[in-house]
Length: 140
Image 1 (spheres, rainbow, N blue to C red):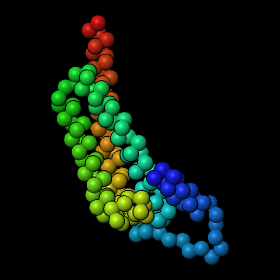
Image 2: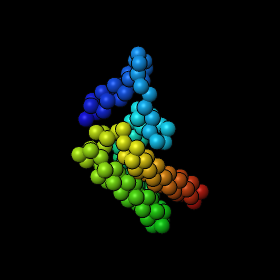
Image 3: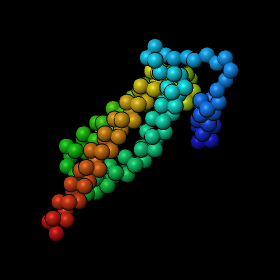
Image 4: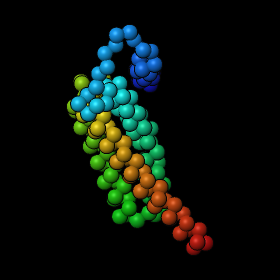
């Protein structure tokens, strides 16, 4: 799957770099080219999938350090919202495959929201871990 994704990205970048004689410039109603939407969707998709294992490991570390339940609940709520955005993106994608719908503005918005929401959840946990670590050091 990684090779397919890299191949798609390579084709997209090649298409941007090589001007074509008589090429027609397409834009969406938002004024953003389909190529830009494809690249942004792929960017957010990759970052979301790269952040998932980091979030899971950070959540486990937060639990081990005794981070309060309010913070853990907030992080889990954001995580749940992020996964809901990705599920919706999968539902509206062609054949349930986000990579097959990279040029869809609707999919891009959902994947972007999923990534930023997961990032917020990760930041909640990392801040809580830093605070817990500082609190443990000052007690020692």
